[in-house]
Length: 125
Ligand SMILES: [Zn+2]
Ligand SMILES: [Zn+2]
Image 1 (tube, rainbow, N blue to C red):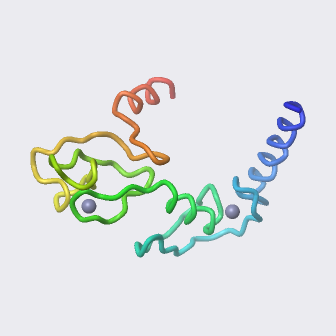
Image 2 (cartoon, helix red, strand yellow):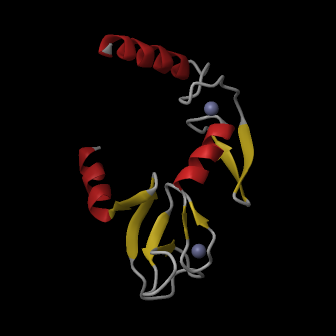
C-alpha cells in the first residue's frame, strides 16, 4: 500500500512541477488571484494550492487577534496579547501590539510556531 501512495505522490509532484496541477490536486491555472477570507481581501501570487483551497486552508487554520479581533493567518508573525485578552496572540503591528509586547513566533497551521522551532528550521535549512 505504501508503494502505491509513493507513486501517487511522485505523480502529483511531477504534475505540479509542470504546472498542470496544484498541490491540492486541482487543475492549475496561471496568474494572480484576488481572494477574500473572512472579510479580509488579499492577492495570491504563485500559491501552492488553488484559490478555493487556499481560502479553505486560511479559514480553517486562522486564529483571532486579541486586540483588533481580526483574523491572523498562517505565516503571520504574532505577539503575545495583554493579560486577560480574549485571545492569546495579536498581530505584530503597532496598532495591535502596544510597546512592550514581545514577538512570539509565527502563526502556523492552527498553532503557534515558536521561535525555537523557527530557529531550528533555519539551522536545518
Ligand atoms: Zn484546490
Ligand atoms: Zn490585530
